[in-house]
Amino acid sequence: MCQADSWKIGSVTDALRHVWAMIRELTGDDAYERYLAHWHTHHASERATPLDRAAFCREEQRRKWEGVRRCC
Image (cartoon, rainbow, N blue to C red):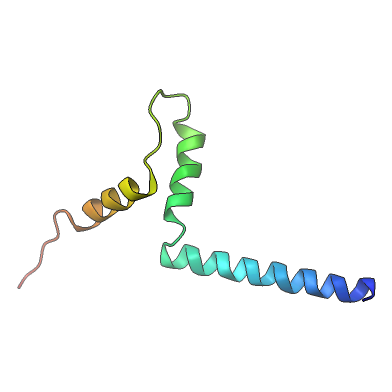
């Protein structure tokens, strides 16, 4: 394999990773990873620990559905 071919493979792989990351972001699939990044940036100096994945999912569901108002 020549060097030009490896460059193409690398850029295709990078493009696929980028597309996959965009899909995860659009669907909210990366919410826990974004929460951890935020927590480490803004709350790491506090003595508390970040929520684990299961607790985070429960809190997100509670936040999403608490106070839902419907007309019917």
